[in-house]
Image (cartoon, rainbow, N blue to C red; front, side, top):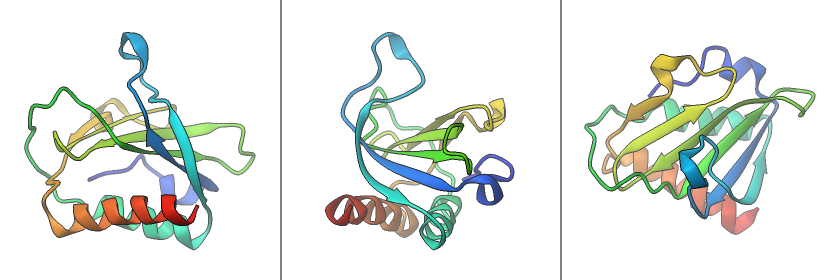
Length: 129
């Protein structure tokens, strides 16, 4: 899976979001509870886990993401991008000023060990957040 260009260099903080619902009207952002904050090496680990996701095909579930990441630049005022992960339909939707259109919707193999490792990273951060 691909992240926005320069994501690793420009991200200073990542919020881990346990998504509770889709935004009414199909808006881009998914609301939920921020369960953890990552900085420094935690961001490096998380982005490595995301970019390790193998490509996969689309599965139909209606896109019901359970987890998201919001990446902020160093002033913490500018959201660079948000990624919402649906492990049922194997889809990631990203939006934000750093996201080129080609990366807005991507599909991954949610059954792959890399995807399961990312899911465990998200879940464990919520437990320790």
